[in-house]
Length: 120
Image (tube, rainbow, N blue to C red):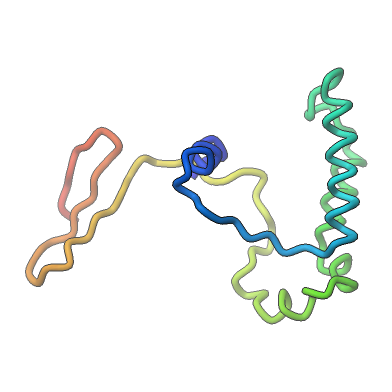
C-alpha cells in the first residue's frame, strides 16, 4: 500500500483506527519539531533538511534511545514482529486483490485492479 493510498483510505474512513506507541515527553518534543518544520516549510521543502538532522531523527528511533521509554520492555518482547530497518515508504500497491471463496471444492481466484480474474 502506498502512502497516497493509505492517506486516501484514512480520509475516506476505510481505516478506522491507528495505534502509535510513544511516551509523552517524546510526543511533545516531536510535536514541537513538527511545528518548527511546518513553519519552515513555507520557505523550504522537506527535502532540504540537512543530512545531520535526518540522521539525528533516525538515531532517535533506535533501541538505545527507547531504553528510557515505559514501552521498552513490551517492544523488546515483540521484537520479532518489528522490522530491523524501517523503509522510507510503503511498497508500491500492485493492484491485486485476492478473493477466497470459502466453499468446499472451489478454486482460489485473484482479481487485478482492471477487474480481470484468474484462477490460482
